[in-house]
Length: 163
Image (cartoon, rainbow, N blue to C red):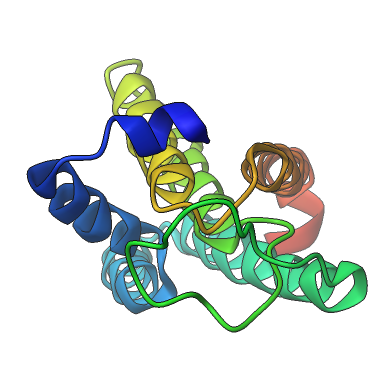
């Protein structure tokens, strides 16, 4: 975390503060609703359910883990934004972003989308570290938990989402 603190610039601070919002429910819920409605209108209701379940399930699981573990936020460097009031572990922004972008990659299945999904989720995860509101293990746990959750939903989608 010290290296990220050493790399700080005004421009990078602003960019990371903006990027981190891409992992928030304020951005992901409207995006999931818009994409989900479009999928449903195309007759792809199961894919819409997968996207919604991945995002909302990851958010719920992350919140339960935060409540249960209650790990304090890092207190190593000056924070660049107001400190979130919830616990540190796991990183919800990371968890939500990985679930959302991984679900989209699985739904659309295009090889060209996978690198975009990976980069988006990774940049959001890095923003949480750069802003110094999470320990690296918070971010790693969020990534792994979201990947396991979303891939499990994907594997079980027939049993979960078929009528």
